[in-house]
Image (tube, rainbow, N blue to C red; front, side, top):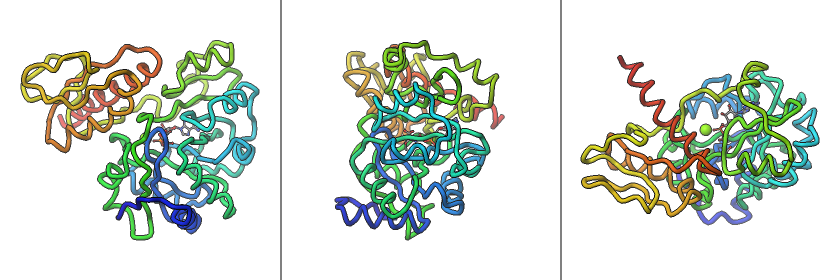
Length: 329
Ligand code: TXA
Ligand code: MG
């Protein structure tokens, strides 16, 4: 599967046509690369699950070009959700709302809610606009990696993950490196108060400041109804990820630039600040695998702002390894 670079208007139009015909198109967003399919096409969406090796009850995010199209997918949109959409879209935020009949079980995993996002990456937005001008309603797109693995932040990483699983009619569009580098903040808006289901670069503080209300606890929602994906291990390279652990010669090492490399370590990432940490993290974890490094020591940033989301991903990356070890035993 060849990567398509230099994405001109006519190339983007062809990609929208491919989507409309039921093919898969991997495309860049500001968070990570997505693997797109027509969100109303059952067969096309089934291929996403096949290619990713993803369990069927794990729902997908529907991507649209502007919040005007939200009504097509959402049957109820609380005032606070409209405020969030107005402020943070287009951008790295996903809203979970009660669904309309357009959002079928094959998108929502059988839930009565649907996740919606308006991405800000120019190429993504142009692709969605073209798709909608052809009569499309939205593009379902999970991160373009095999289930449980590290999300891709470049088109090369998509090719590496999924290239041999895609067909000749599918496409991978190149739009450079994803600027944020970790997945969107997911906010549940299907109750009277918002709750953050997945932290991201739109932070808890940003949401609370905007809405002037206290965001709800996740635990209380888990009691109310099932929250898919919230408890699963994820984002894992082949290498073991150890957080704040003892260092052994030959291990990979990721930490803020100000933290010196331990003797004998292979430095994989040295971001200057937390934003850069998010941007380079997945690439650094991939680099460990491409260098055949078995163990990566990571010093996470403080759990503040986007640092919270980075810690969330690192914890899941390290958890999956310990689960795998147990599975193998
Ligand atoms: O940044 C992103 O969100 C990227 C880009 C491509 O947009 N997409 C992404 O999709 O991360 P994915 O499928 O890898 O992760 C989506 C998460 C899953 O954990 C899923 O369980 C959750 O969104 N989700 C989807 N629909 C949901 C719903 N109705 N209720 C609760 N969670 C939902
Ligand atoms: Mg994902």
